[in-house]
Length: 136
Image (cartoon, rainbow, N blue to C red; front, side, top):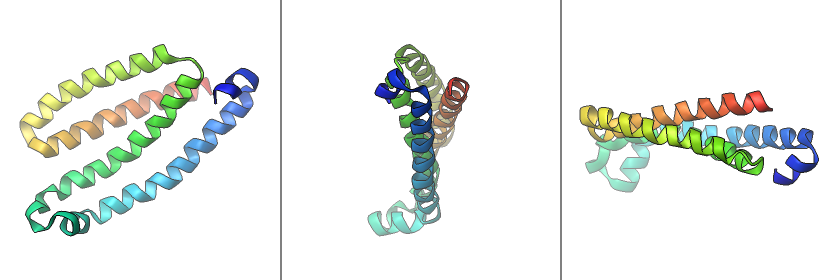
């Protein structure tokens, strides 16, 4: 991506779009499958004692989808020398995560932690997506 940024903006845009598309196609079924099979996964790995953590795994299944796609945005922004933008978005996310963790964990415990992380990673995903869509 860094090479394409210097030589061909069109190739960079094409590479980014294909990477995003194929990653989404790969990760979405994994997230949906984990969501649908969460109870079986927890029971298989940990046994019936941890059945209460099924809700947390279901929430984190979609967290992983957005988190993985954010990695593509991070790579793109580093490649095009937009580390200041990257820093600002991530700093905002850290502040938002700290505040939301305080609120959600206090009210809902470990499920609140998963909900908080999902909300923040989704908001961060939207910010990245809007910023990069305006640039490319």
